[in-house]
Image 1 (tube, rainbow, N blue to C red):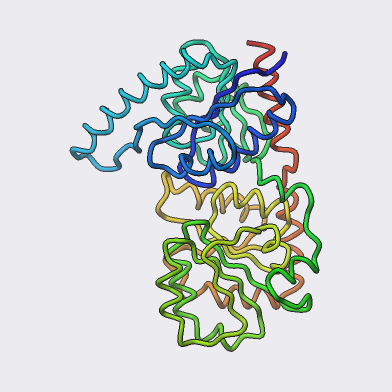
Image 2 (cartoon, rainbow, N blue to C red):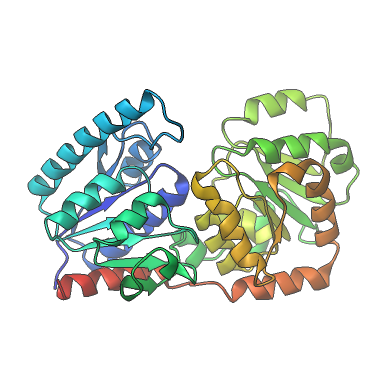
Length: 368
């Protein structure tokens, strides 16, 4: 069967957007004439990132479910009702052959409508702990692609497909030359390097921990590449303008993450599903600091799934100031431990995840 019209829905963070784009690009690679429409949430990151990648997107007025009972509940249900109505119009006008949800606010209304109209539907659940929207949708969709074991806790076992999570294409293909990567950052290939990142927007607690340990950092014979994120860069560079530290590079955003991963001996990061999939693929010794500010504390659950395999070091947010830099220094100086972490995390890699997900899409279309 030829794929001609596809809707991908979801977003909110890069962790949802990058997998969605990877899936869209693989569909287009197999079916160059396919029409691909994205449906996102108004005001969220996808409304900017998806058009830049060359795809059309329509926004729904959906917002997240309020955690506490308040007047926001009324607003939520009004926007939900409007989003379902608009999702129905989008589905009826576009007439997709298949709808793929990648998580995020917008995927709920869109997949619900599509499933009710018996259009083939598939969820790509990135985390080890499913959110409430995907738990509800799991009963209605045709298939659920997952990246972790024990997902039968949340979904019908006969619908689960263990594919792994898609990662950015340049991490799978055309892996950069080592010399080129070190030159990009102005480093020597003999340098030991720690990469610190909280994602494109940044992570306040990670950034604060680095700032609190800045005097220790300036004395290290270790190079540190620090992506502060767009929200924190100006404030941090202002605070540190009087400190001259040749071993510390501060970046608002690192465009060439493939170069950054290539030079890094140790990575310090949040525990988003997409980031973890990249670290598994590349076999990077890592220290994960799960964000406590996400639904169902799913980043902690993601990280613990790797800790069970002795594949990462975990530091909780409330102990980050005291432990983060000492743990990182100890790890970068312990080659045996780094090698063990690298070997273990590689066992969890799924390098063909994107292709396998699109193959599952093809299967549900054939058997609809």
